[in-house]
Image 1 (tube, helix red, strand yellow):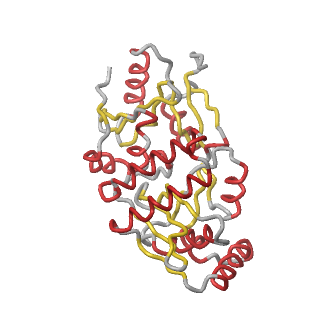
Image 2 (tube, helix red, strand yellow):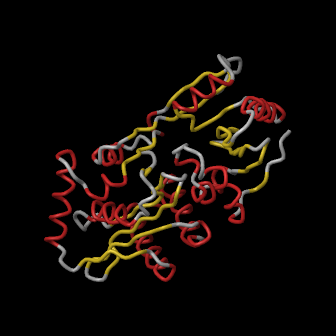
Image 3 (cartoon, helix red, strand yellow):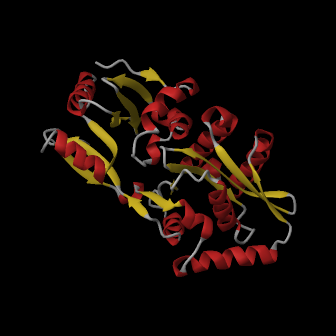
Length: 301
């Protein structure tokens, strides 16, 4: 049985020493996501034979993320399979994309069953596409930007410094009143994750931006690197009464993300029709489908 440890902000260096050099672009591997959502998933980690192993519970079901590292992947996979069985649970690996499927098949041929879920696909864009909005495919976004600038002449984008975090929390509180966070479990969980992350922004290495209109915070966004070339956008809120606020904060933030990050992962749509439409409208460069891997000889409920 593997000895797993509780995740804390002090583990950032060891976790990112595995995730940053890796080419996996999954939003699940963002350190800030792992920390800010651990209240819901009970996420823990272990280092097994030079691999980072993450274990959590999804709706009470024991689950793992595919090990990250270099070495004998087959040996490590067998160890986490044994770990699941030692607790009386079937083996279940989540966030498995097509590249991971190929790797798993190469390591342990015909042992796994894969099932993808479109609702959990990651939307990944070229940072330059979001920042520049060039071409016919993004004409409508440029129209929104132009209309915003014409309507709201007194607007300003600011970097979300520690001194402005409280400003974002107050805007989020107003957003939640309008959108009924207290009556929606998913929004309530997101709020808990966001508030915790805001209070630990510096420790998590979050980068954020705020959009002001007439000196009032009308939108903000925060994110953090996932790996060496992919940046993850974790939170984005805007006043729906300000036409074009979402489009503006999206573009301005993309302009200010460090240029070393070629890709921007704007995470999943969770099957929400409006969110899916919005994410597709930005024409993702990659729609990274993810799913679950289980053992062929086990039944998963």
